[in-house]
Amino acid sequence: MKTKYLKPQPLVKQSYQHLKRRLFDRKSLILSEQLPYQVIAHFDKATVRHYPAKHHQQQRIPLVLVAPLAVKMAIYDLFPYRSLVRYLTDSGFDIYLIDWGQLNRNDADLDFNYFVFQALPALIKDIKQYTDCDEISLQGWSMAGIFCLLYAASGLDQGIRNLLIFASPIDAYASGRIGLGYQLANRLIEQSPLSLQQILLLKHLPNRIIHSPGKLNALGFKLLNPLGILQGHLQLLKRLSNLEDVKSHATLGDFLNDMIDYPGAINRDMLLWIWLKNPLNQGKFSYKGRTLDINNIKSSLLIGAGDSDGMVTPASVQPLTHLTSSQDVCFKLIPGGHMGLMCSQASSIQFWPFLTNWLEQRSMISQHH
Image (cartoon, rainbow, N blue to C red; front, side, top):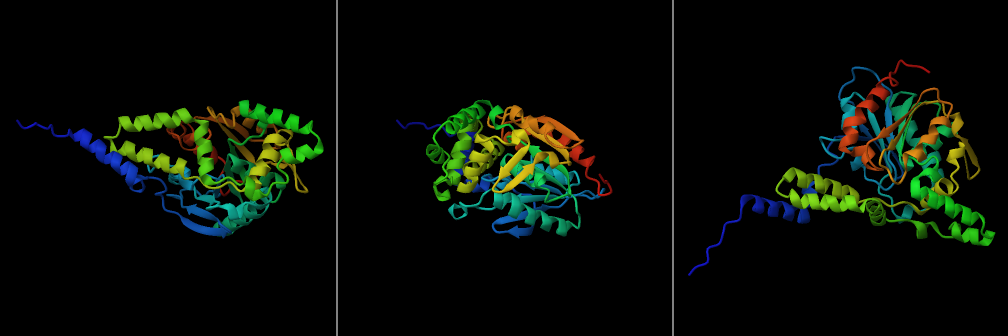
């Protein structure tokens, strides 16, 4: 007697095909970075991407987005239907995105001095020359927010009309358990003998030793929200029959799995000068012979914090509201965690319209301070 086999159900077969494609042909599923751009400037490995405005009904000053290290530029153009740069260009803004490039161990010595006082001034100068405009709006998120804040405080550029700082630790000690940990660590280090302090502060370790590769950075970000990562995989299994859901999972996975190196010198600078010493909360920053005063900043200021950001909490970001000389300061809670505030669906619905409205009111070419 012959055994009668059941034909595979269409959905089961479809799910199998999608799973196979997700596992073995994931690149074909990725939806990010589809918006065209032109590279208009270089500085070592860094480039400036120009995303032109979809329309120019009104002449506006350039909007410069400074990317943090480690992340791929995909976060700014994650999906065709949910892309920050697409939203901004559709709203009439010319976007200039500073991409630091594929850093590796050969870049281990790059520090604050390089990014804030060499690369950033050169790239912004190129943007101003390209646009023939002396003023810009300057936005930085996470570590890039620190870069932008220090650059603005340096007085090197009097043409920053609008400064936008998102999810950057101003009072590092106020950043939840992470901040308390750094505060305790700094207290213990300061109470230690000087010779031990030198060891604990990694001052004698070569930058290549404390350089962190992209794979390690990716793991670190995942460990911030392991439950969310697991839930994402479970949702994929439930929705394998839907190709769009599979594409979404592949796109997010590509972004989270393929991060870029942190130079060892910047790891040291962030650890010592931002998290452990926590100087920004006092409004001043002394670094390698430079003293920067945040009170020098007079730009219109939009400060954003992720409402569920466990790494840089709103309480850590908010002190910036009273440290500058700006007469136009706005603090805004943004839906999402440390990354989600830049690209989540909730952020795109609730925050992006506010962002464009805030910029529109302050970006006309004819406006003057």
